[in-house]
Amino acid sequence: MKKLFYCQLILVLLLLAGCKGKGGIFTPSASGRAYEVLVVVDHDLWERPAGRALYNTLNKDVPGLPQSESSFYIMYSSPSNFDSTLKLLRNIVIVDIQPERYTHAKFSYSNNVYAYPQVILNIQAPSEEEFETFVNENQQVIVDFLTRVEMNRQIAYLEKNHNRQVVETVLSMFNCEVWVPGELNSTKTGENFFWIGTNKATADQNLIIYSYPYKDKDTFTQEYFVHKRDSVMKVNVPGARPEMHMSTELIGLTTRGIEVQNNYVMENRGLWKVKGDFMGGPFVSHTRIDEINQRVITAEIFVYAPDMMKRNLTRQIEASLYTLRLPQDKEVVIEGVLKDTIK
Image (tube, rainbow, N blue to C red):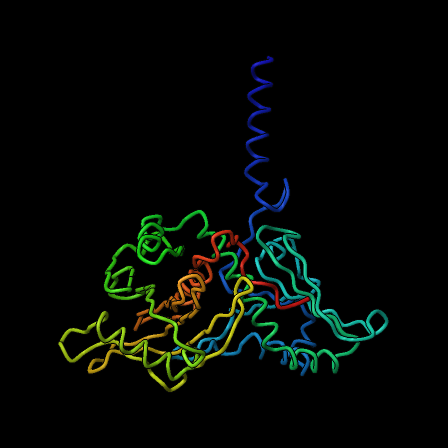
């Protein structure tokens, strides 16, 4: 009898451990696809200008892709139908309009309330008019917040599931560290150049790192970036014939400064193409200064998937860029590297 009791106790403890994760003992796993968002809102409000403002925000095109793709998969539910199944979804936005409770529009959010990993973003306002204005003024904030939530989830996954051989190679070549998914296993090296990809006919994901001496602040301009990128790719990423090589498409190219781990990063986002061929696709690059060695490090991801949608493929491998650690970053903790855009 005592033996049976201990077996039952061990079974219960194993079940509890399986449910725990980081969200608490009884927190179940979140459901839903990456970049899927459930909006909890009254049906009539969803169809009025306030609801349309939120829908249009979540439906904005992702920049730097060759075709139109919305930022998120969008679903909605009325509060009365927001049941125990829907509460397990990974990304939830709750519309809360109460004139007697709120004096102005604002955000609030919570993590892992019903499931793990999960975020619930509340958008609160005293009226539909103020809600509409607030959402329109904060479109990019909302998109960035929900995108960064998903990006941090991928970074946390990479922490435990990255290609360790790539870590060793990049460390020996550049004295840097980067995490890439294990399915990236086809490599090529050159002078201050490293390339790893899946080498698939489609849905091909790639990461490239290259370095060069830092000269002056003009290094961090779009013009200089394109010149340097095209010269590096011409040597290291050739096409099927000698006159073919990867190059940068100037139309739609965006350049901006972002902050990663309190460091300035120049982000370039746009399209690549093979000169003299029909191949092409999206790329995202991060360029930083290696302060210790006075050189510039550029890490870039690019995707080739001519017969597929590219949003998730690009974002999945883009998370690897945020794991890049330069010599001055040796003590940096990577997980959760992207800060919240909503305070």
